[in-house]
Image (cartoon, rainbow, N blue to C red):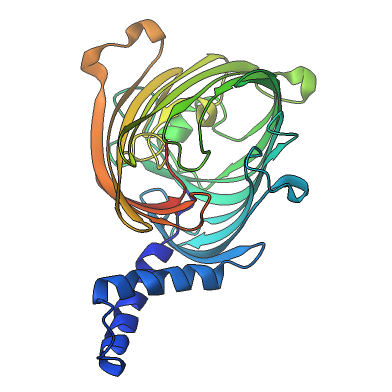
Length: 379
């Protein structure tokens, strides 16, 4: 849900710079279009130091409304290993404040080491987050949603070790504590009282199995990125809800012509036991089903299928076209063609560095028209 609009700011500045060049240097043969991209690269180089890129963030999405903040991101190789074998690691730090009075701080380490034999991912998030509750099921109880506020702390740690070519396996730990506030008096959340309506503390252990043969972690043009995760939240390790969650995520990348790429994803989530409403399987938001509010549809089981067509336009600038369909259900046997929700849209990309990290702007159509700004690809 963290988005940045540096992309738009760059192009507003580009126009001013190119005009000045045409006036002051009429004899120069460089065209306006070329000047735009030269200046864009200059701006990117300016904000990208040797170790950190500092990106001012003006954000917008249906979940956050308009917000401002900053993001710092470091792309590096562990222990300064510059070999082509070792994948780049990332460390983004983000702070945002939105017109919905949401305050969000996140940092996430994505670390590759030992010639890609070891992978470590750790995330910390602190948020004061007014949000909307629509009810549970494939047909929302509330069309517009009911506001509530959750203050939460979230942490996860995931370590994976390569056990065969392209196969990684390892443990995962998650912790989340929520304080639910500002419920609508007499509203659906208070009257129906789903599990977790007055807060939650979750602590869980699990395993993650990955099959990863991508040729690039930021901009893959071929290969697979498949994962299966199993998490068990239990009172034995401090959780006040006992439940399990299983997620299957299949992704395939196809180079169809030149640098044109088709990315495909099939995502499935299944929840068992006594899961709080905020941790049910849900769809919507900037990662799955753009054009639908995050959590508008939630239940014990969910599926989403997505496809993107990525095409370079000029130098560091490109476009994507995407479509998706998804649904939720009480039980997986209820899945059927008639329950699907569909959407699609298009977007613009501007490459930040040679590793392939992108700024993205997406315009999506689902049960609403929505705009999303962010870093890196969705699939």
